[in-house]
Amino acid sequence: GQQVMQIPQYQHVQEGEDFTTYCNSSTTLSNIQWYKQRPGGHPVFLIQLVKSGEVKKQKRLTFQFGEAKKNSSLHITATQTTDVGTYFCAPRGGKLIFGQGTTLQVKP
Amino acid sequence: NAGVTQTPKFQVLKTGQSMTLQCAQDMNHEYMSWYRQDPGMGLRLIHYSVGAGITDQGEVPNGYNVSRSTTEDFPLRLLSAAPSQTSVYFCASRRTRGQGPDTQYFGPGTRLTVL
Image (cartoon, rainbow over all chains, first blue to last red; front, top):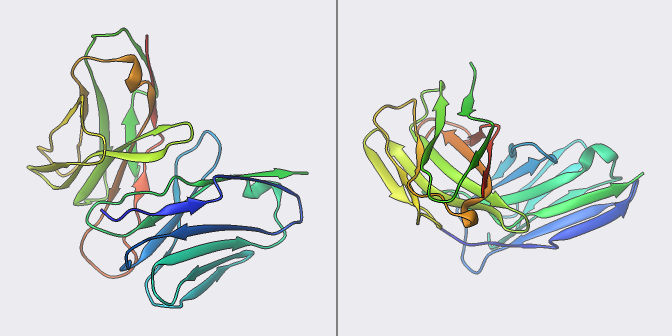
């Protein structure tokens, strides 16, 4: 499976601030998925990106797939306490290998 | 649909004991997999299966066995538990054919402690 590196590993923000997590690969990815895991919960699928340069939005969440298909990002505008959790990227391949995740803490 | 179910939710073992973590899905998914999650380590793939009768190793397979005799079930066996296997275990499934994103669905997890 293809390996990806996620940065940062942890992020603390004040409620209302923006947040971005990055997912980087040394090889070209066919597509990439993003998941969210709430504290004490299980990962839940958010989105899949397939096309070079693709941008998708889900309310305050914006997902991007790089032009070279080697990186992806998730941006949250005006964070809320409900955004707390760990966000994982996973390049879609024969076996789904996850990045280490970015854990987001939001201070009210 | 119940989705992906896992039993038990919690388990405490002594070193050297064996046990089987159960996983079942009712979505007729071909692909099933097991992950372990440790603090700061993310999700690491243990074993996976692309269909009944077919299994393969993931990133961290040592100390674990799997089998896939039916589409629905994918049990994970710990042959001789070690403290290093203390972790949260997630089972997941997804389809491998058809249109649209191949969303991976996770079970609620089994929290295992090995003393």
